[in-house]
View (cartoon, rainbow, N blue to C red):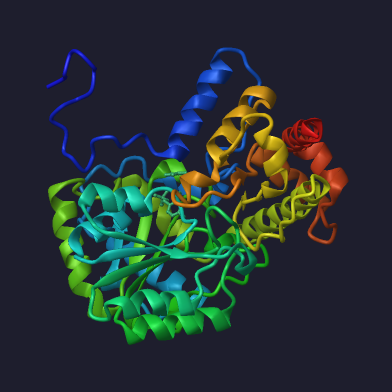
Length: 433
Ligand code: PMP
Ligand code: GLU
């Protein structure tokens, strides 16, 4: 029932009361609204792949449009086998197809896991926007683990150990996302091994969120499951590397000894969403199988993202922002701390105000660092460098051939909106002085 005086709903579940639409979706809707009002907006807010779904996968979906039956709650058998094969091919992981769970997006699977497993959620700060609100909805305790900028905003094994030592027997889930949203950085093998050792010592369940794994810029993603197979659940899906966010298909791959968790999640799934869309699951069989066409697509996607990362990082250096090259995905996480004093004179004291003023005054939409790190105060922002026509850029890259590296002229010609967005940012910051 609504309270008519204040329009505040009075009998919402207390865990939900006060929650707002997820920042990623809210910025997308705001950008759409501004565009509908006739404003020019540079959409660097929502992290959506600009590249088309590979044709061979779209064709598979067309061929399977007639698939109309409910599928098993855990997923189509053939798809679960294919995902197990994909894990072996890409990470040398030995996954039993019976331990693969298909869901309507990995976001839903991460939520279900938090629902069925009783334990604290441990996440580095900054982390992707949805992990912590999911824990709040369910009523789980969140432990934000420190992550330092000079360590690429990554979790260190010492910090994980400090958290675990506070109460060694406490059940915990660590979500480790790499390449990372929001930063684009990943963990080298040595660091993964050290984190794996700590997780093993304290029986921490690791959800390894590898949704950007296939778009590691050098194609060199390594999963922590290689070093902690018995305690790692690998989370992945079609949304990023296959350009199919709106298809809503995610995968969880469990080790045998955590099958009980998968079974509990499947029970909840059976009482809620029933099963994942049938035509999408059939098409996903093609996506996760080995095809030269998909390999070629991925080589081009990776080199385009690499070229953009280089160009845009250099542009940020030109704005006096010290930021190392990202390793994967399509995000940059600049820290505008160097402008703090001058920003104060413009009444800008925090990252949400910084981003909303930049959007108002330049049309460039980004997400404030606070959305990813609620208890930190740096003047950071997440830039999703995705405002370009992915189909056009992919075709141009293919036409140029793999032997010709796409440099600045290629970017200026094919990604003019990103160039203009950064021109506008540069002018905005230069005018502050
Ligand atoms: N993890 C991270 C880090 C993400 O950025 C996203 C957003 N796509 C997800 C999980 C969820 O992806 P999906 O539900 O589309 O599989
Ligand atoms: N993960 C994407 C992002 O961080 C958007 C999709 C979502 O949040 O569900 O922008």
